[in-house]
Length: 232
Image 1 (tube, rainbow, N blue to C red):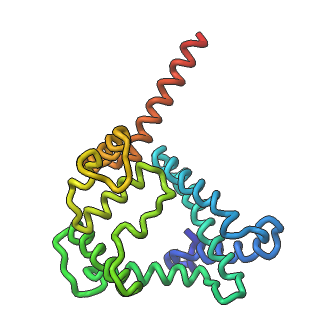
Image 2 (image 1 turned 90 degrees about the horizontal axis):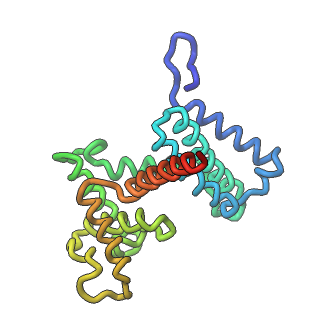
């Protein structure tokens, strides 16, 4: 955190302003940074998200801090590319920040308004209700609760998010049993079982993606131990 004037506390966010300045300089002075586009940076954005998750799982605060910095760079970089556009479609990092601030205030009426909630569950319920109202206002007619779920994410995470969104919209839990009843698209027995496992893990309060990643790390450890033993 950047220090403030002598005798005064540090000002949170000061270093973020410096990052914005550095990014602006790089876009002008660095040939590589200057030629980047939203599309060319997309693989780095995805990669940095996974590296943040790895650092989080490592339990090392310093590694998490560094990887969050790399992810933050991708956000600032993308916003700077948008700001450089001259076709009327551009936006700035301030537009990005103002947009999320407005969304947070709007979706937390129990903090910034006069709404009273009984606990975290009601906060989530209110959030989903507000989101539905926003979609209806933007599109004229209510859309599906699943419209904004990105299908490019890992399959376990995708399945869990679809189930969460559907449940939040009041869908019957039985819809997640793909082995029962007709389906618009055919599903293999294995696919139905995997989808059911996601539902089971969520019912147990577990994240299926994180659980499988933990199992993968355990398997990696076993294989490495076997390799050391076999080399004998």
